[in-house]
Image (cartoon, rainbow, N blue to C red; front, side, top):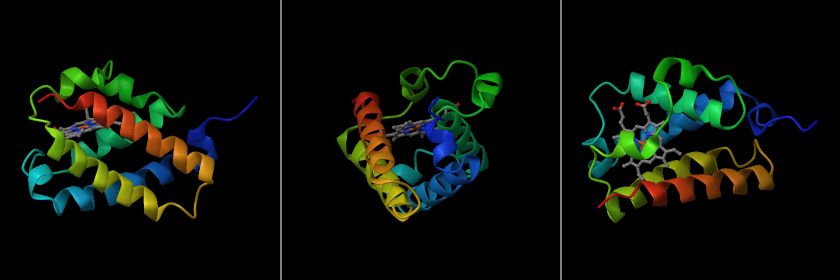
Length: 124
Ligand code: HEM
């Protein structure tokens, strides 16, 4: 049986690195920074747990946060094209840093996934 992408890319450590780098991008972007709380600790943790679960790792996210319902959870935020693009820039930069750690297929799969969900979450 094929192992999950979660396992293939190195498990939790990969997603922690990815999300840490993503939030460096958030901190450097005015539009994004203003949308997130001052203390990013929990924001980071939730994104790590969500991604781990989505890609076949432990379902801690579900236990702690319940069903993801991402569109509903993003409804309070004004996600226009600029905000969506800024989010994708931050995530794509983070992913670029991992390019040598994962295969081209995994890279493309992750990139396409973020692109798709970010487009779905635009709400303005
Ligand atoms: C399109 C641009 C996006 C913007 C502007 C955005 C913004 C935000 C903000 C402001 C929060 C709240 C953080 C907090 O309260 O701690 C959040 C939470 C979250 N976002 Fe996004 N987001 C975007 C796209 C995405 C995408 C593409 C994903 C997944 C692939 C995602 C996954 C999550 C998750 C899992 C949470 C935590 C939900 C929870 O409370 O459990 N977001 N996002």
